[in-house]
Amino acid sequence: MSSINDSGTFKLGSRVVKRLGYGAMQLAGPGVFGPPKDRDAALAVLREAVANGVNHIDTSDFYGPHVTNQIIREALAPYRDDLVIVTKIGARRGDDGSWIPAVSPEELTRAVHDNLRNLGLDVLEVVNLREVVNLRSVFAIHEPAEGSIEPSLTVLADLQRRGLVRHIGVSNVTRAQIEEARRIVPIVCVQNAYNVAHRKDDALIDDLARDGIAYVPFFPLGGFTPLQSSGLSEVAAQMGATPMQIALAWLLHRAPNILLIPGTSSVAHLHENLAAAQLSLPQDVLARLDVNSSIRPRLLAGDLHFLGNTPLAGWSGFSV
Image 1: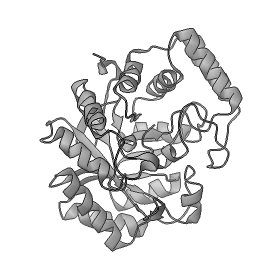
Image 2: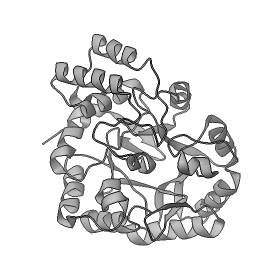
Image 3: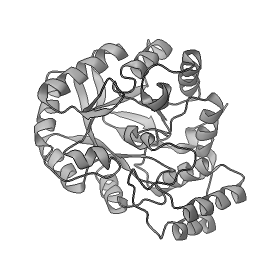
Image 4: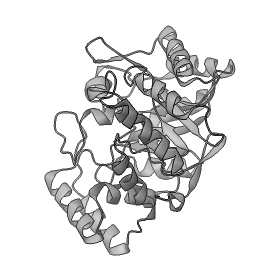
């Protein structure tokens, strides 16, 4: 059994979670749409994650839609007292599986109630507003776009006052949007694209750490150039690990407020991901990874190089 205790812990809202969690996006069908190919396997992955100490699960009712949350409920309810389920709103799915912004007051309220119903909860512990300010946020979905998020946050803050949401976070946002959000409501976490090759949020992560706010990176292996992918693979071979394990271990080393939510639909892959908590990167390896990241790629949907991921994984983020 893998142990994730070495990942450490960090505060997420009013709860303390282990820094290595699980992202549930891949439990839905292909394209994060429809039911999984193997529902029993999806149930097994969730149960194995919790059995191995995971107490932070990231999800959304627009995975499927509805499918992933229903699987979580079937697998894990009644929930353990220490389990924190974090969801996100701000999008819906078209009949063709397309991703559509959904940020009107009615849509956001409906999304909260959908999450509550399908997860079988009375209150959502943490809800992240997935910001889709304009079309650029939809089509260049790995890069946040400037624009006011006050209308959406005001709706979410009202739902919080009504007791439906305990804590609020934001996702796919700029520094200015985070500052705007914090003037409206306390923000407990930020979810953005970030990894050893895509480090635009370096300064932001350190600032959030000083303020005790969690940073949840998505796409730990996305946006690599072929040269960077090769360099990461060489480091992994040297360490006797997988590239994903190196990428996750680097993120755990990067800052104490980083919470990881790698996702998978495979129990074997789950154990590989959780084993990253026990991987210690020596200084020479950290230096090599820093050099490897010196050529910064753009994380845009049309020009990504992946190590075993799909472009869609970045939208969910939240998972790998």
